[in-house]
Length: 409
Image: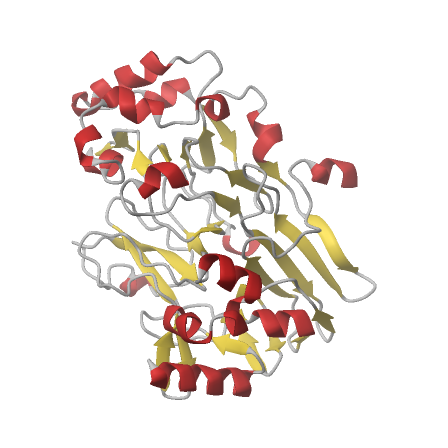
């Protein structure tokens, strides 16, 4: 990969420590696209109906999508430099700490997080993501995740803008085992044991591993750990059958028919927590800037999972004709959701519609070195320039904790 090392180094020199990234589209065979993430209407099934509709766009990803029949690079972000392109994963493998920072490189030897938009017409089946110990049994890593609902992409809520989280207090493990026993009898009734929360644009949630959740139909920005493990516990969604293989795919094969084992895999206390919303709900908190200064940088994802800061995210708004210089404690993936301008030497422009395979000017990856030195963002347009950026583990020691938004009101 010597050529990648040279290309990546040249790209960073020209970009001032910032990579230009191409859009990364990912289909899901078991979901219906919500058609709000700017892909051309003719291209939602560009990969063929057998692969499913494209309902996700991944950002700053070095994690491959675990989709049946997918090419090996599905889900991987590509850096574009002139007429050349190479994966962000290969660039990180070659340049290491120069891109992701010394601490992350030393501990993980990769970029261990990514983010995405997911956009569905209706809800996703009630499911969980395995923790590290469980995922290791099948050669993978666990997946904590988080949600933020960007107002720019959520003018329409689609069919079900509510998310079921966890299980109602008083639910027993035997109640859930009975649901799994009824898998092939139609709707197994697991949502009868849960509670739905109405989703509000401009807010978010922090979701640990092993906690059941059935995300609703708002477009969701989702910073998360770099893994694609999951187990679906709901047998039908919107009248469509969910294959049992989607329940068992990331559990050991000898446990696939053991419903007690599959229920024991849940974080029981976390699922039946009577104060679930207080433990997981997020609202934006100003990190820096003000209307008077012409920009506001807000925390939109924050908090710790099992005592660890695994990822965080901010939403930056720069007013027309204004600029600001921001410094951060680590590398980040950036997606522009409104307006136009520049980040460092690179142009930013938010497209209204994107053809599959088309290049855009809305996404970049900022290296740890550039983030520490400070990056200047300028709004050259007539509307606010709004972006989302997510960070890796321990990049933001001063980030708020879950619930801190209440102190700011």
